Length: 210
Image 1 (cartoon, rainbow, N blue to C red):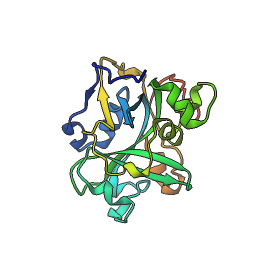
Image 2: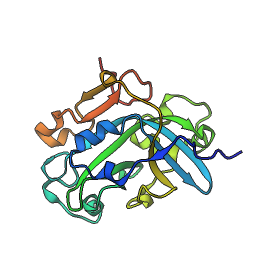
Image 3: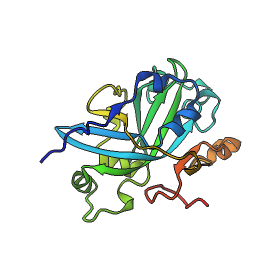
């Protein structure tokens, strides 16, 4: 039987995404629920790892120096929509566009903990057994939740793709910051503590942080 939306899920308001501090938003997204529903198939996971990208001044950002290309143009849109890009020609990486129009802030969602639709996730990822790798890392989570580049520009007010809050609460001491992963090309900006995780969650990607 197809599961229905959890009645406790409340979509995040547009105001959540329009705030001007992308670091704060990246931390606040931890514990929220990322939901997809395509062809009446519902999947969802709790966000446990994020990375902030601080727009034009961030050398790790695709929009550094206000670079506008066919791919990055969506980053300059009003916050509250998806930016999904293809990495290495294989992995679809899902980002949350934030801030006002023409300020290209974004948050990469790096990992979620599955909570709904695990059978579908196994089918999409061609896995036999559910383990932590199914949604660990941005490419894996997109595959499991059915997210692809065709969703770039999709507004989070839709029922196909949105982020919600529920009764789940995080203790601030369980939020850990570190440098981002895979942005060595950005020089000193590679060292910025713009990656945020829920401490000790087994779905978090990368090396275990102490």
